[in-house]
Image 1 (cartoon, protein in one colour):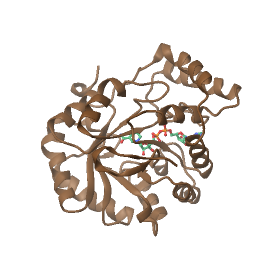
Image 2: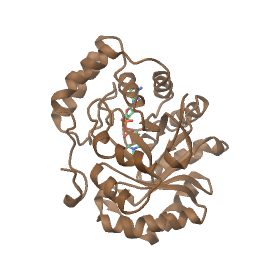
Image 3: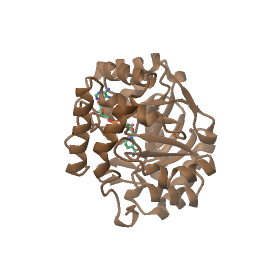
Length: 311
Ligand code: NAD
């Protein structure tokens, strides 16, 4: 496993990170023992970055990850989030954030987080994130409950505006850098580089579209994006290559992103994705896959308040 530095935090993170949302059954029911074995397998194979949130499975994912990491907490760079608690349940008030971190620490069976992120900030007014949420998170950092703090979301321009208005250590962006989307590079990367902000790229499989698992029923992408993804998966299958391998290798090749987070509820998926991290990408196949993606490239979907949309 290769490790990279996460911006100015100095954290040395595995280039493949463990995405915890499937532990909350967000992609179908995960078998609990299998999920626990998947976490152990990830640790054994050198994955050290683990991302979760109270929102995933409405606390189920944190509870499962906490149980799986028991006795091995020191091997993990552990990240969780605050502010999002349900599909439409958001609370970025300072009081809720203070309560939230204590609840997360209890579920995760630890007394500190490595990374604490404001979750899906596009669902509330920018002012509240800048003036209330981030300062409250900095207070918790000073109190020793979290080593570094940051923000997450889909809307790149908002992530950038907030990071311009108030310093953050880390930005997590999802579904913005993979075979179907690369606008992360246009909006966020130059700014993040300039300020040494650690950048995390989540959902390299475009939340399942670029894998044999396929998208979950709630997937918000337009139908033509799902269809392009399906054709890429088919193309790869015809060449005897897993689409997830190609998609992950494309994401790993990013020169600034420190860790790419993939959701992996099974040992088999962990093993496959770790193997993809240490094998070469088929450049001819990549060119063909990108050609299939070209007509729908960078086609996202609305998320959050109207004022926070990128377009
Ligand atoms: P993803 O692109 O990683 O896709 C996950 C899906 O792909 C799951 O169904 C998984 O079982 C499947 N998969 C993974 N490896 C596979 C393989 N080798 N073969 C077949 N199928 C495979 O999407 P994701 O899980 O949404 O993103 C990764 C992680 O990033 C999340 O779990 C979460 O921790 C984080 N994330 C954070 C935010 C945020 O903070 N706003 C948003 C999205 C994702």
